Length: 360
Image (cartoon, rainbow, N blue to C red; front, side, top):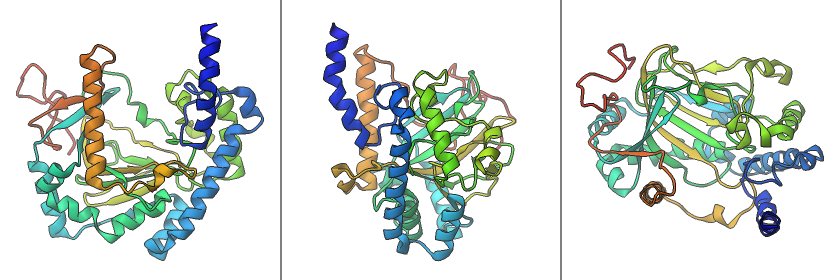
């Protein structure tokens, strides 16, 4: 009886979430309903979200050059080597390397991900970063790819592969982030080797073809009870063998030098490439994921510093929940650590936790 009452009370909420970016098939039984998805619920959300994003991109087309627009529309990403002037980039790397303010770390399988939130205090300590984020090219590419004239969330991010005991990094499996066009960007502060976890993307997989739409429909039928947790949360995984039947080429791995910018639509299939040995990748990382449908929240004029403060507050809330014994916080606080530092043994050893063969 209580379950029935709870379900009746939650049904209006679940229905309202259809008009938002909510993607979990597991937490929302309306989105996860096999019968509704057989009737086309998920496919219609995907198609409508894609059409709206394309319409918004047409209005934002003047923010990017014709060359970049053509590349993005064809491939789903824009690749810009030597993004910043040499002296500006060198100063940016030096400032990031020297910064040792608060940061957070989380483990994903055997990978450690380190993030520095860009609140006002952090941006003041790294002025070259503020200048880069205000550049016309950065702002234009982020907005066009994300189909929103809106500020993205930005972090300084480090990816440390094979840095801790654990299973294979779940982000190494090809996937789409969600059911609608979104944007992520990487300005690499380190060289990225081909065998050291490069960003990987399937060119053209951001386009909603009829074959992709049918694949989305098929995935939606079993997603709610999938053995894969990411599928249940609406971030569908795809086997490389499925790409050719969808008319897609093999994934492309981006082994690139430092000071390369990649801006991509992560509705397209992408992953962290495999790393054959311990490696460190440091980057300025951004993502934009506003609601794909008309929403008052899309009008909020966030700034980078405000979004950085929101990240800090979110982490603080996680700490409070852990102290209250409600839920363990996955993001662990660290101080006195640089984005470029190697992980050290928690025992205080002076040797890197994963040996001396680190790829930089």
